[in-house]
Length: 367
Image 1 (cartoon, helix red, strand yellow):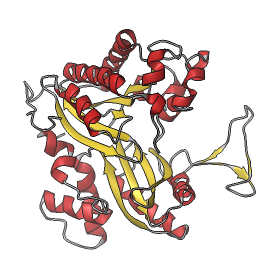
Image 2: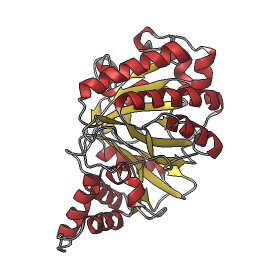
Image 3: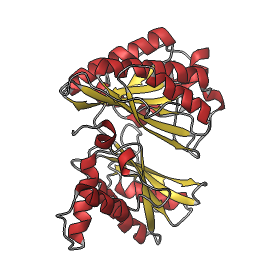
Image 4: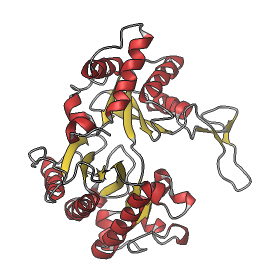
């Protein structure tokens, strides 16, 4: 694994840049992860910014950046290598998944429109389907129909449900074969799409109760919780005229969430994807989680970020907590970041190295 030995040099300081944040279904076998990372770094002009592996989830989030065509080539090589090394028929883990490369998002970073990134994603998907025989779905901005824009909908049924899903006319893949071929049996399917920057964020609780963690997630996430008659947990599900469950909306827009128990930490976590950091800042998610945890008789002990984060997110958080404590916010950028890390408890489970986790610090650019 040659990560961070390669220097990222853009040919032009104003050239377009995109980021790719693939989630692969392997979080324990370091040699396999290393060979997949090597396939990415075999493309000139690419820099791998971060490798974040989770043992319990059996999943690794990779982050790399470069000019658009180079990123798409690196993504293709990565998918090819992962399909050779990961056998989904043998995979298990806490996180929902349906493919060796489970999610493959492309994110505009500098001087490129979302429309152009959508074009690139669809071209990449076609190549993956045609040359590798791996089926997949376009999601977020790349989706071909509304019901496929949501990642959870594309991944519903997970790997185990693919034999039926791929042959269902309503869920015919957007690229690759519409059948559970031997390639699909081994590699599963891919959700591929253009999206905005997303923050993958877990909040740690001083309980092992997955039910409590899920209750907090359902209170907060935009989708909310299923409406029930009587008992909010065991009561009869309320359904609409089409037979679909009715949901009670959650408290925060642009937030997805679920609860789980991580045996390695001995803690339950509320696991979030924050899809709109302008509308819902990270510190707001943390504070509301603290409030809801108290309501359920538990406490937040800290939190963790998965993958990379934009600098402005931690600067906003640090400034918020400084003002809340009536402290002077006229301090250096790195001091504000450090205050955010401590206030959010981002160093509870392991040291948080801002130089390696902030996109701008790793990519040597301001966005």
